[in-house]
Image (cartoon, rainbow over all chains, first blue to last red; front, side, top):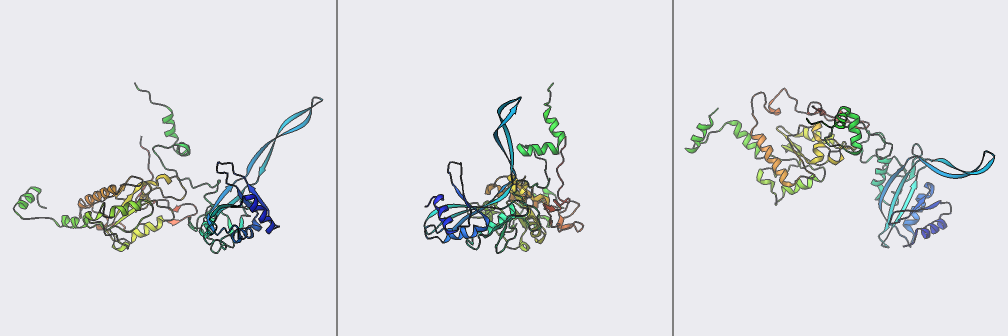
Length: 219
Length: 203
């Protein structure tokens, strides 16, 4: 199968307006993916499906990723005049990368027996501009998985034939797989809490936590 | 009421004496018909229990009914999600009295490994009166057989009259259980206070 670079260059030749980026992956598998901008995502996916060499006719998996706002720290060397002498001083520069939602498609070819090609799309932000083109018209199998991404992450797929919640009930508010989702506080007593549950237990049963901190003195 | 000693003596002479209560309970205990109804992986063990190797038919409980109107026993086999819970309660309401509930597996008892999740009920006992709880993840078919035997014992010991008679013979007790509604983040109410209260620590 072609490398991501080859696919990228052919995609760019076919769709001059598309902005395509290759995302590196540092894990041992090193599976790299193609990041396509939202306006040209549908055309790019159609190219990948219909191209004679690729023929990616099977969408095996659709998933969502939530990327909250991230503070990036960068050390920059700045020339400064300290007590009349010019010195190089390290300064920490902080920038905030705005958050976004990402949808990942894993594409395979049944006809050519190769794959996967990983396709990613990102929304503009996490609040009001969360629209992405639906790829269900191209791969019918993406329908329920896109509904799941909509249900749990809140990505609105334009062009989806039936965009409703699929796992949660219709009256549910919020998107439970987002990192900032706060579930209702319905903690219940557990005999052997640990990790996050232990923190919850201490919050709900402070007397219990105090009694455990002081070991009993045996006479 | 006939004395136990006299009853045994008569039985030796070939005279069998029984009470209506015993006869009624004997019949009920040996034809517990479960509802065909599985929610997760525990249902696979339930199916295995009903097949030839474990043979639930030995206990008269092999007739899995496809309609709640014909079932006596609800085996809650698997994870009860908050989305599914109202439907489980509705199915239970549609079963005729006398009816029993077995909570099968860690999820049906307490939510199991999903207890701290956002969409799993922390035990079906929040809405339904559970008669027998089977621990395990999933429980072996033998555990389900044991639960059926425990339930049979419970049925055989039920008294048809008196203050501790079962719910279906007590006209003052409501037979229907309220179906919870879907809320914004949780079910409303989060539990049925008549059957379940949050646990309190006793020291």
